[in-house]
Length: 305
Image 1 (cartoon, rainbow, N blue to C red):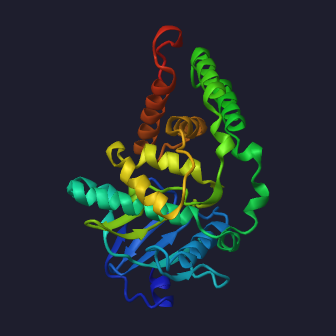
Image 2: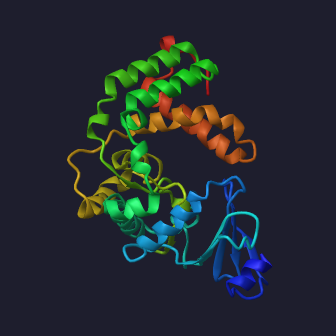
Image 3: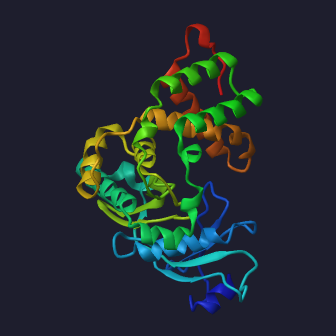
């Protein structure tokens, strides 16, 4: 850390706070003025480059971190890294419960507006930041039926659910997966969660962690944000903020996209041994969405995830 502090004139790192949470990257706050994000050694070089490009490109449209420096050919340290200016505010996951209802409403309206801003980002900006990702986008990549089939085939092979439940889930997707006809491609943040949103009371001060950003289905990200992040009583005000910036011809099926999301992650949960909290969360949420879409009674049995 001393080498990075010297190179980017961060001052002597007298106060160093590690902020990593359920992540493979190491994130440090240096002297309460800068943030150093150090990626795992095996990280694709395009990942930090993508985060840098998007933070820079979107900085005048929403509060994104200012980039101070990043890993290059000089190899200041052996792992890829980004040095960012520390933004004010605290993560919403820690402050949400302290806010009043009017403050929560205001926050949700802004969250909707900022997500729409991301989704409405011009293609030339996306191309510069994400390189040639458009070439990998096809119906097999985004199609709900194809993705659900692949996920369920893996789950069946690994015996993660009973055969009755797998059959019921397949029937569910056959009946409900018409939403793929409404796919709307655009820039997706990839992790639009309270943990990645900084706020000072009712003011959003930062939208963080762009390493998972991709060119994908914006309706899917909207549905997952509503399902996983925004409390149901604030959905209407969130959508009011969203549609102020980007129009919607229909609202996405939250249960459909949420079930697909958790089924695609189910085969990986057992590998997350370093993050037991994350494991428990995904197991609980997978069971919850399965109970919603197929129930637990009669022929489905009682086996849990």
